Image (cartoon, rainbow, N blue to C red; front, side):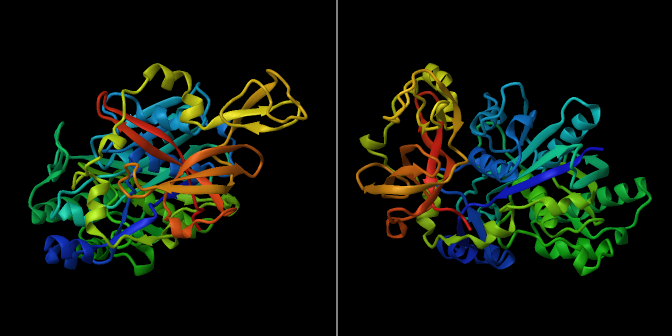
Length: 480
């Protein structure tokens, strides 16, 4: 039977208080209705980089060559016509004989991708399919969306061996309900009246989907250890739970006050949080929202005890940095355009070079000498070990999941950066190899020679001439 075999998540390091947004825009009523803070993707992050981070967390301890599918769910893909899931597969250094697919255009796409992956496993067309859900939705300054939208990602591996949570059943609803929408060419979501969305959608669709699932499988709410559902209106979230006659301990805590509304990733991030606390035998029901609802339920197995080393939701929440400047926050998403100057200009990208060097650039793949075992980046034909010097005796070697230390570092206040200064460091990898990388998610005061670092897939530049998003790996201090 198909089910979840591993999980992972990603929450950006930076958080901004909703009071900070309210003080800058004057929307005190929005801040009052949504207390707490929200997660903010850094200037070099987007839905794709966050999906890679969540997938990396999910793959901890797993064999990457066994993954035969990547499904990405997002309403904010960097590309409208270039498969974003394919970029993720390359960044993760997965085999090319892999099925990739993008799911989009609804925040229900996360559970849609999850159900599709389970169907593929049940049909025998795949053995291990990774489902990534990630969104990075901008909100217009002073809008309700700006207050509510947060950024994050979840990743779930679906298979039929070593399953930690069996999919036992599902029930789906589809309604062409216009609550929020974004037409092609729109930067920001448009929204209808809150009362309409709250009373006609959330408080009806989610209970209907859950009730439909319970009836279909002759179950009751008391049969579940956790019931998960999203709702951007916190009071109504409690009202839905009361309507379903749930005990407080059955309701999975909403992530609105700590992360925000993460779109396609929202329900799946809550599911990851539930799996972190789950015990063998627990039943978990998860429902999504968006043009209807998908409801599904899982039963946790003894294999859940073997899941170790995940940052998931809990550790990412503990690792945080407060962003106190609304102006800086706004510049990250081009709400406040920044003058780049000639130093920030990017020339036309060499598409042919990007193809030929895709594993080197996107996958951070170098070489390792077969004779002496010396790793090198970028790839080389001649071993750099002076005691070896082997020629054309190399095998591919992935650096993206290797730890390193900061050999030396510097900053550049003249180079353009949305979060100046631009920082660079020479990274010595613990298993061998050395290269220069940009540094991110840190400041100069926190850096020191020989400090540990890890690699993070980030947006390197945007080629405005050809509409190309350039990605590469940066180094950063390890998250807790």
